[in-house]
Image (cartoon, rainbow, N blue to C red):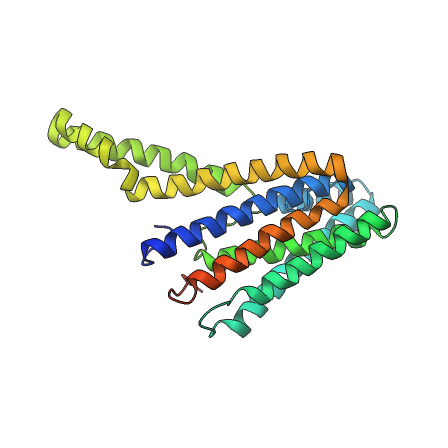
Length: 254
């Protein structure tokens, strides 16, 4: 169960936090594609790009793809290191990692806006670093339930949960007939099966909305629009400060 053992207010806070991070990831991914022609958070595609380019003898492309992957990994390492140094805090445990991501996105936004034709590799590496950091951060927050920078796992889990919801409702019908079926149907909104599905669907919708808004604003204002995800991350910091004072986040198993 997502965020199991956390009180209702805490679950809502973590749910909102996960949605905000998914929206930020969708926006950054879309802006990165329009600005630089690469899928910043799509590491599966980048690893495939590396292998394909290396096999075809296009070493420059292979190196570019490999650098994106390494930047993503370095972001994840930085996130975990920052979280470990602040895990004993009563509140604001995620502020250092979020602060680094805000700084990175802000740097890319201003540099890309004022000098769009220079240091393109540095800018894409910065975006990949920020997505690796964010993915590791959200994995830690959710107890390894949520990874919002890519949707393959999210959509897979959503499909699984739809079947589980249907089976749970049908089991009520098999046990108690029409009454049991209807009772399960009415109880579905508060059932654990629906909570997981709601989380996965929310992440997918948030990512799509982030992609749409990021694309639309980039085509209007350019790279400077990366400051908008920074605002979203500031909202995440506000949630962090509000819910960490009374709740301990789920810890991913090691």
